[in-house]
Image (tube, rainbow, N blue to C red; front, side, top):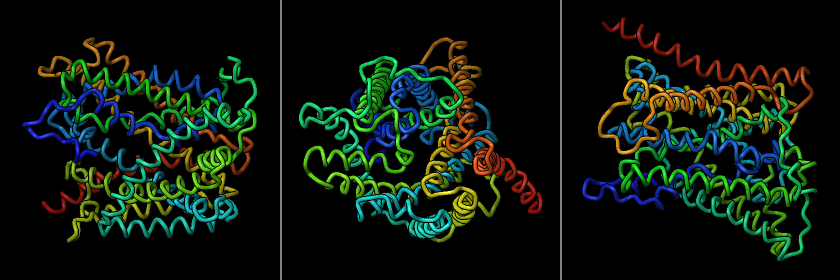
Length: 486
C-alpha cells in the first residue's frame, strides 16, 4: 500500500479524508480482534470497546498525526521521532523494541497456519487440537524454519498473494457482521445469548480477571503510527487529518461493537467455548454457511485466504522489522554480528538471532503447558502483553515533543496547542499501556498458583524482560568491538 500512496513532489497534498480513513481502517481493524476480545469478555466487551476507543485510541491516533506532521522529513516513523526528541540511544532502543516484540508474534504464526490448514482441508480443528503440545511445537518449529529460508531467499510472490488474501479476509470479516446481523430476520436464526436487550448484559465486572484482559484490547487498536508519514501529503492536514482519524476511530468502534453483537447472536455469552480464540472465526463462518444453506463454502474460503495472509505476514515479519532496526539504528549500538549482510542483502546475523529466540519461545512453553489449545491461548495472550510495549515509545516521543519542541514552526497539524494537556494525555496513554501489559501477565486460564499457572506467569514475566534486556546488553558488546578496532 505504501508504494501506491507515496507522493512525488508534483502531486503532494493529494490524499483526501476518504483515503486516510480507508488506510487507517484497514491497518487497525481486523475480524480476529473482535473474536479474541469476545472470547475474553463476552458481550461486556462492547462497553470496553467504547471506553478504549474514546480514552485511548482516539488520542493515540491524533498524537501520531502531530508526530508525523512535526517530523515530516522522517519517513521511517517511530525511531526517527525518538532520535529527534530523545537522542540516538533511545532511538536504538525503540527500534529494538519494535523488532523484538515480533518474536512472540513469529512464534505463534505457524500455529495459525496449521489451524487454517486444518480447517481448509478437514473442515475442523481436530488435526491441531489432538496433537500433543511437544509434537505440535516441533511441527511449528519446522514450519518456522522453512519460512526463514523463504524470507532469506526473498520470495516476493507470497507477499503479493498475502496482500490479496489479507484484503479478502478483511472483506469477509465485514461480510460476517452483515450476514449475521441479518440472519434472524432473513433465515429465522435464534439468538444464542440471553438478555441481549438488557443493559446489565453489557456491564463489565471490574474484577482482576477483567483487568487482565485489557491488554488484548490495547493490542487490538495499535498500529496507526504506520500511516503517520502521510499526514503531510494530506489536503489541508490541520483540518482533514484529525477529521479522518476521528471518522476512522468511529468506524472501528462501530465495527467492533456490531461484530461483538454478531458474535453474541451466534455464540452464547454465558458459555463461551475455551477454544474460541483458536477456532472462533472458523466456527463463525461454518455456522454462517449453515444458516444460509451454502454448506462449508464460506469457512473453506476464509481458511484459504487466512492461510495465505498468515503465510505472507510470517515472511514479512521475519524480514521487515529486522531491516528497519538495522537501517535506523546507530552502528555504535549494534554489534557487527547483527549487522552482517550477505550477497543477497539478507541480514544473516539478524536472521540467526531471530531463529534462536523464536525457537526457544516455541519449544520451552510446550514443556509445561498441558494441551495445544491452552498453548495457543497462552501465546496469543503473550502477544497482547509484549506487542503493546512498542506503542509506549509513541507516547514517550509525544511527551518529549511537547516538552522540548512544542514551539517548533511549520507544523501543519497539532493534536493540541496546550503543552501541559499534551504531556498529560501522553502520560496517561503511556501509564495505561504499561498497566495493561503488567496486569496482562497474570494468566487468564487455569487454577491460580498451580504448577502450570505458575509456569505461565513465569514465562509472561521473563519473556519481555529477557527480550528487552538483550537490547540493553548489545550496545556494550558493540562498544567493546569498537574499542578493539581502534
